[in-house]
Length: 360
Image: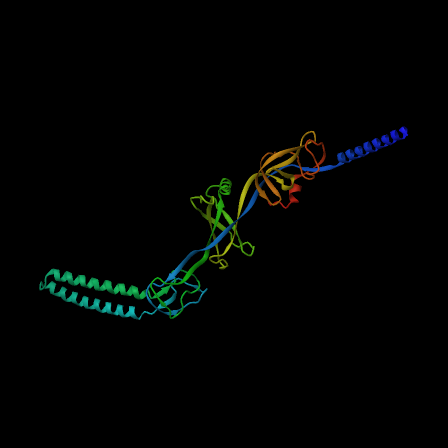
């Protein structure tokens, strides 16, 4: 019986040893893919929520009190500079102008008569001066009434598009009442806010006085056909948000963009000589990013890295790697620290091209 137990124990040991040996052989035979970081000039696209404004957008208000006698345009209509838009009943102002013209004519006759007498030394020079002053006052009153009459006509100060009306024909309007708004949409100003860190990265990558071109992603998720130029950056950061406002100017030849639209500005930020690795080569421990690097003895070593920026499926490395490092590409969950492995080196260009990298 004792001999039987010894034979059974020996069989179990042999079986266990055989299984362990097979397992180790299997692990040793597993071949992992590794790759190297690659350095390329790369462009990162950043999207920022924006507000679209006309280069000119003004309120048209009544300059005189009276009944709105006539509306010559319609809502949404394109108008030309100087075109008559609204007419406030001018009767009272016409009467005032006629009265002022009559007084000016009377004052001019008085002045001429007084001047004729002054030339013959019949009247004193002071009387001539008083007659001249009376004439000048009458002419000023006439000019003022002429201006008031002109104010009954509301004309377009520039080419643009009429917005909705706030009054209707026949309405009694007071001085300063809002009639409508007028927008010049030939060019559009698009405002967006850039965080401080991204502003600093951007300014260090872009040459001084160079033209900054951006694109507009419209609300229908399509890119606007015309590129925009960043024409101004405000001087100060917003202390509450940590952002700085940018303004881009877009030509709008077809009038597609309108005042008040929304969308996203797509800004391309160049990164010269950026070191790139696939995102899938990394793993995270306590909010820190790591990769597995294969050392000269073919052993797996974890290494912390710093990320400078992110692309689809790609990380731009700030520190922690060099181009000669061999980084584990697949099987991160199957290996252990200091484990010796067999690997196959995949060219980084091939790896990145399969990830849909956008780089130059």
